[in-house]
Image (cartoon, rainbow, N blue to C red; front, side, top):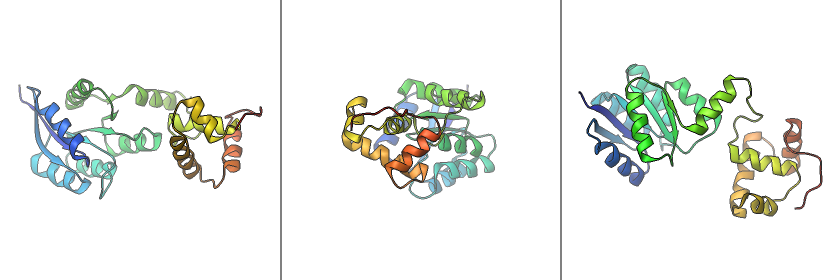
Length: 216
């Protein structure tokens, strides 16, 4: 049986090396190229004509989403499996619109990645458990408020809406205060608000949190 030809795209050299070694060690998979940028991925795809591209979304020149769209437009038969740290709905649906057939989060077990590569190479659609849950919620009409937020950001926003301060949220979620601050900054940017008070108003308007008093 002909080997599955794979192009590996990721801007992190060590992660890409690990991916190449894992895939290249499989008897039915051959890695025909590597790329660290979106532009290089498009060029390598044209040169090597892979069956499948494992695509990161965060790339230094053009995004993995744009690169996916251009690769699929040039070669409609190629499969694209997204492997990324981005778990927000916006990235997920943008990748699907661009033509990706699979979407996994980095941190997925290496053997599961190999299985997903084979499945996408056979023309199947593959999504990690958390990604599949988001798709199911969307298509069954149970889509949550603020789809651009990650699950962790939604948890933080709910606690913010309940009146908890960053220190208390850090204790509740068992994370560092700096991590909470980063989540709060990301929430403000995604909700297009400038203050905690504005975020609370938006959250409660969407049904998050309660009006009970909380400790800061």
